[in-house]
Length: 110
Image 1 (tube, helix red, strand yellow):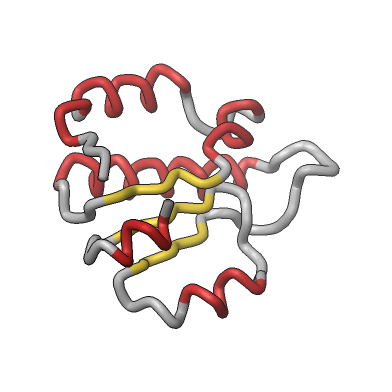
Image 2 (cartoon, rainbow, N blue to C red):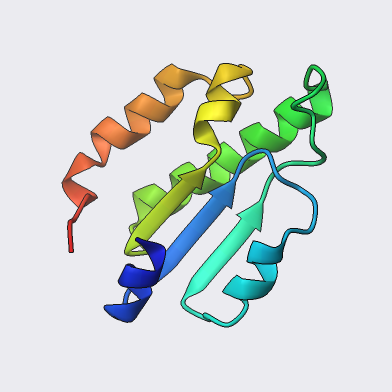
Protein backbone atom coordinates (compact mmCIF):
# COMPACT_ATOMS: atom_id res chain seq x y z
CA UNK A 1 0.00 0.00 0.00
CA UNK A 2 2.86 2.36 0.75
CA UNK A 3 4.43 1.78 -2.66
CA UNK A 4 1.03 2.25 -4.30
CA UNK A 5 0.55 5.52 -2.41
CA UNK A 6 3.96 6.82 -3.44
CA UNK A 7 3.26 5.80 -7.02
CA UNK A 8 0.10 7.90 -6.86
CA UNK A 9 2.12 10.92 -5.73
CA UNK A 10 1.21 10.65 -2.05
CA UNK A 11 3.34 11.35 1.03
CA UNK A 12 3.62 8.59 3.63
CA UNK A 13 4.63 8.55 7.29
CA UNK A 14 5.52 5.23 8.91
CA UNK A 15 5.81 4.95 12.68
CA UNK A 16 7.44 1.79 14.03
CA UNK A 17 6.52 1.31 17.66
CA UNK A 18 8.79 -1.60 18.55
CA UNK A 19 11.75 -1.63 16.17
CA UNK A 20 14.73 0.48 17.04
CA UNK A 21 17.53 -1.36 15.37
CA UNK A 22 18.73 -1.18 11.79
CA UNK A 23 16.70 -3.26 9.36
CA UNK A 24 16.97 -3.63 5.58
CA UNK A 25 13.65 -1.84 5.08
CA UNK A 26 15.33 1.36 6.28
CA UNK A 27 17.80 1.14 3.41
CA UNK A 28 15.06 0.37 0.89
CA UNK A 29 12.88 3.27 1.95
CA UNK A 30 15.73 5.78 1.58
CA UNK A 31 15.04 5.54 -2.16
CA UNK A 32 11.67 7.20 -1.66
CA UNK A 33 11.85 10.78 -0.37
CA UNK A 34 8.03 10.77 -0.13
CA UNK A 35 8.26 8.23 2.71
CA UNK A 36 9.31 9.26 6.19
CA UNK A 37 9.91 6.40 8.62
CA UNK A 38 10.56 6.99 12.29
CA UNK A 39 11.40 4.27 14.78
CA UNK A 40 10.20 4.64 18.34
CA UNK A 41 11.46 1.31 19.63
CA UNK A 42 14.71 1.04 21.53
CA UNK A 43 15.60 -2.61 21.22
CA UNK A 44 13.88 -5.89 20.57
CA UNK A 45 12.09 -6.60 23.86
CA UNK A 46 9.71 -9.20 22.41
CA UNK A 47 11.56 -12.01 24.19
CA UNK A 48 11.36 -10.17 27.52
CA UNK A 49 9.06 -7.70 29.23
CA UNK A 50 9.27 -4.10 28.02
CA UNK A 51 11.09 -1.70 30.29
CA UNK A 52 9.84 1.71 31.35
CA UNK A 53 12.13 3.16 28.67
CA UNK A 54 10.34 1.03 26.05
CA UNK A 55 6.99 2.30 27.31
CA UNK A 56 8.18 5.91 27.31
CA UNK A 57 9.55 5.60 23.77
CA UNK A 58 6.30 4.11 22.45
CA UNK A 59 4.28 6.83 24.14
CA UNK A 60 6.45 9.51 22.54
CA UNK A 61 5.89 7.73 19.25
CA UNK A 62 2.15 7.73 19.75
CA UNK A 63 2.16 11.41 20.73
CA UNK A 64 4.06 12.33 17.57
CA UNK A 65 2.03 9.98 15.35
CA UNK A 66 -1.30 11.22 16.67
CA UNK A 67 -0.18 14.81 16.05
CA UNK A 68 0.74 13.87 12.48
CA UNK A 69 -2.68 12.27 12.00
CA UNK A 70 -4.44 15.35 13.39
CA UNK A 71 -2.36 17.72 11.22
CA UNK A 72 -3.30 15.77 8.09
CA UNK A 73 0.15 16.53 6.67
CA UNK A 74 0.61 13.06 5.15
CA UNK A 75 -1.66 11.23 2.78
CA UNK A 76 -1.02 7.91 4.50
CA UNK A 77 0.08 7.10 8.03
CA UNK A 78 1.23 3.57 8.80
CA UNK A 79 1.20 2.61 12.46
CA UNK A 80 3.60 -0.30 12.10
CA UNK A 81 3.65 -2.64 15.11
CA UNK A 82 0.81 -0.76 16.82
CA UNK A 83 -0.81 -4.10 17.71
CA UNK A 84 2.36 -5.20 19.49
CA UNK A 85 2.51 -1.89 21.35
CA UNK A 86 -1.12 -2.35 22.40
CA UNK A 87 -0.60 -5.98 23.40
CA UNK A 88 2.27 -5.02 25.70
CA UNK A 89 0.35 -2.01 27.04
CA UNK A 90 2.96 0.43 25.80
CA UNK A 91 0.13 2.71 24.73
CA UNK A 92 -3.56 2.70 25.57
CA UNK A 93 -6.11 1.34 23.14
CA UNK A 94 -8.60 4.03 24.18
CA UNK A 95 -6.10 6.73 23.15
CA UNK A 96 -5.55 5.16 19.74
CA UNK A 97 -9.27 4.67 19.12
CA UNK A 98 -10.06 8.22 20.17
CA UNK A 99 -7.62 9.71 17.67
CA UNK A 100 -8.67 7.40 14.86
CA UNK A 101 -12.38 7.93 15.45
CA UNK A 102 -12.02 11.70 15.74
CA UNK A 103 -10.07 11.86 12.49
CA UNK A 104 -12.05 9.27 10.59
CA UNK A 105 -13.06 11.87 8.02
CA UNK A 106 -9.41 12.03 6.95
CA UNK A 107 -9.31 8.39 5.87
CA UNK A 108 -9.18 8.07 2.12
CA UNK A 109 -8.97 5.14 -0.21
CA UNK A 110 -7.03 5.43 -3.42
